[in-house]
Image (tube, rainbow, N blue to C red):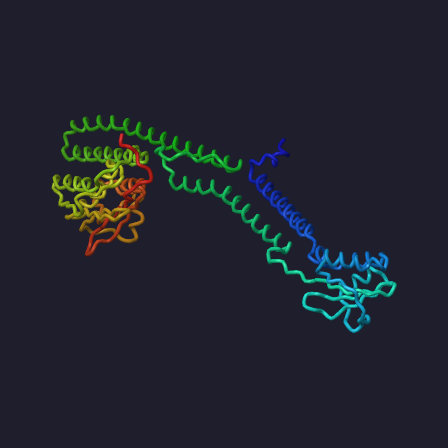
Length: 442
């Protein structure tokens, strides 16, 4: 059965074969129809006043008795007025050059008849025919034929139809084969692990459907792998917290104050590291639904929280700015940026600017900044900036900016780092105001 699979029209090979075969058949049908139409319409000179009518009239008159010829000529003149047939009493012309229609009449009549052309008169070609018995007649042959229009030529018509058919079939084939590939590229761009994106549609040729099924299965395997990894690390983190808690209790019995404080600091760092890593891993799930919220209120809340903790953080921007976001995730990303700013600067400013289609959130500090060489790397997980922005190991684990970037990317935005004049750093978030899909808040 496999050898006959090309007849199923399910695969790309069979569809292309059918396309080529249909094109060839259609072209042959068009060529046949055009030539049949052209051949079914006899030329004008053969239907009205051509050499064939003159030949028939001469044959009829030659075979009729001399007494019947005047009546027959009257009837022929009435039936074929274009011939203008009449008796000829002058000498047989010999000076005019014979023309192809005259030669045609001469060959058909034979050597016993004499055919001589008259001088041309417009579209009519006059001719004198001498019968074997000596009688002569004159007649006109209207040989003029209006040239056919440009599209009336059979070859031109064939080429035009061929171009049209091949173009239409080519466009159809291109759309049928490339549309699923475009959907694959779009699905790859919108790939996420939260289950929001729909599975790839399994349509098109068999090869395309097989590819869609394989990509859907791959996505399921990736999602399962990430979920299993997150669950495993969450379990490890939970299990490690218990011995850390026991070690903290045992540290209380250490009599040396210096050693006890150092051990407690190490345990606090281990606990903070476990919490940061687990938070970073869980962030990829993005379980919070999109909802329409006031971003300006969220930014003011972040500024007020850090102000209450004794930091100099201010908000500059409009009083209200509505956008479709995940409010808790946005709050977390801005909080991470502000935490990074207050560690290395004395004054921090949260600035919001709104455009018709997107908004920009700038978190500015007056610290030492980050060198241009380090800017592309500090957004990566577990990468920290230079020593000026990382005073000791307890300041962080290089996950704050990575978490913020992941959250912004999940919103369809972008996070970038810029220098502040005269010194400092600007962490800039660009977010679209409207999302493609709006989910109801749970």
